[in-house]
Amino acid sequence: MLRGAVLLLAGACFAAGVVVWALGGGAHGVGALIFGVVLLLGVIFERWRYRSAPRPDAPWQKTGERFSDPQTGRVVEVYYDPQSGERRYLGADGKPYPPDP
Image 1: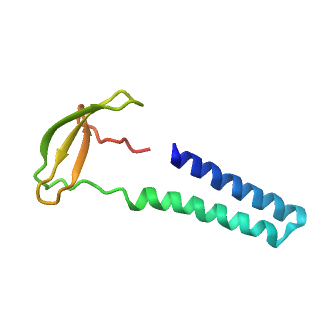
Image 2 (image 1 turned 90 degrees about the vertical axis):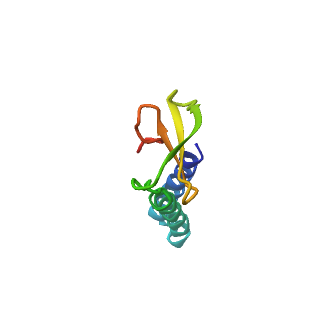
Image 3 (image 1 turned 135 degrees about the vertical axis):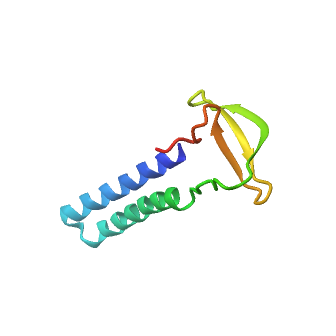
């Protein structure tokens, strides 16, 4: 939800910058245009950079925690790596959670 709002804001800033620049505003539109691009790149970079791939060789242990995702209704199980402290979430069907966009 927050990601969508930030993407909407980035698109609005970019569009406003393009409109002002195209109407002869020159440098006044460039600031909004650059802000929109930076915001958009930040959201894309965050999604790419901070998504960690689970280590397949780790000794994953079930924690016994399960929950139902309110948006998709999928049952999700929680796994734990005692060496790194990392937690991993998998659907009860064995598919990754959250699913790739």
